[in-house]
Length: 428
Image (cartoon, rainbow, N blue to C red):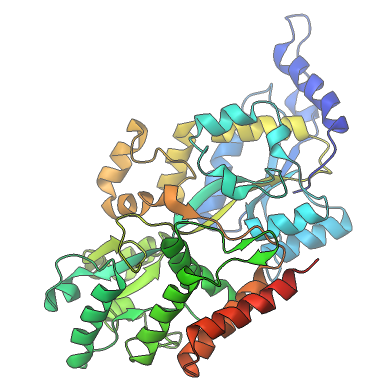
């Protein structure tokens, strides 16, 4: 994950060219004699299974520098495990499970390679249909992460319950939601929606931030070391959230309850595609009633921007196998068949814009219509802000929301105070 100087990989690149292009009298060295590329992957069973297949197939070619992969070591988080490895000099050549906030931290201390300087980078981005994806991943003019997947945050709606209140379409505007909430509240059957994901800082990715992206047209909420949400769009979002809570149309704490969407305690909840597999096992009949809807906005939009829970692969600048490791990444992500395999094994949408137009994916989405609905938002699902202060920023956002919903503070004042606090946090 390091951004390195490139003097060291020039020699490696020449070596790689020789190994793949030597003549009959210059046979490549035996694969077993080559120092392997070390890869760390997300310690999740289905992702490990995917990488096992990739690595096995790659290693079957004796001209390839072999790859050894292991799950990211056990720690309180992947980020902690990686930082521990950097401190001890035991980091791998490449690793998955990198989100943009952590990449920003590693970029700041010169720990990540700038992948855009690798040969064939632009061709790979074009081939994988990522030209619209990569700008949001730029960090200080560099491309340190190659996104693997994008999980759009979208609303899951219970269509069976919506119909009870005369709604044949999912709400898209705040006023539509208010009408639904008033009808729901009148019969004392529960809340209208699970509007906030929880109290932890990272849960702002699933409530305030996607709602803000939707309302402001995908503009960044942090730019030029300044908060960018203390404006009319931010006020619209926070006013909406305050009205829902202050009208008792939602609860701030569903954490101790059973799944409120599955039990019918709410009609809607913001979710990602990872919940599909769980619902298939636990709530298969409820899953048949789920319809995907966009983030709500003041005026309504068919396909507004949202937050995309997304992670990618990065290369450490200390790697002694940059050219060889890059060749492996080009091979993995340069074939759409591998992205199809990822979909089938992992179930999270690959970070590519042609999921609904590439014939290769037609069969998968024909058999998985809910995944298709979610995948339609991949090209409008944006990552978090590229900042080293992610947790501090989003703790301030949490306090901002709590002031509005518990103390009934004016949204404009809460926005202003949070923006001021965040600007202080970001001050050089």
